[in-house]
Image 1 (cartoon, helix red, strand yellow):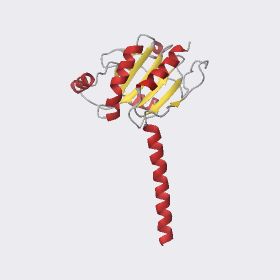
Image 2 (cartoon, rainbow, N blue to C red; image 1 turned 90 degrees about the vertical axis):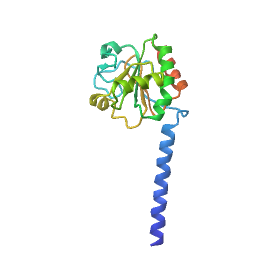
Image 3 (tube, rainbow, N blue to C red; image 1 turned 90 degrees about the horizontal axis):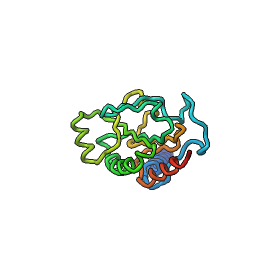
Length: 188
């Protein structure tokens, strides 16, 4: 009986360490992020490819519309977040600074709001956390198109050809974001 108990405890501890290691590696904003996609010379995405910008129309809280056609040829940053998410609150001011720096360089930011808050609460939040980029309320279609991101924040970055070039669950350091954008802007 004692041997069996020791084996069960050993297996549980091993599984716990593996899970802890995975969570630590995937949530540390200073660790290298997962870069996805092909080389800069990759062909444009075709409809239905899983590593391409989903063919969705986004409408932000001001009524501005972002269609698949309007996003073609642009670098697109899609960030899923929520008002209650502490890492999101830390990340948002850096995203806003980066958005302000790159918005005139064919870079589009879309902040996908994952929680259901009223307009006044959202207005207060955007003011308090200096959120300057477009905010889009999440839909079921968006969640499905992005694989139901289960961690917040989650960021996807797409190159000019529509191909996903970067993905990260967890807070993203400003330097990592700007490095990714600099590389993608330089590609023609």
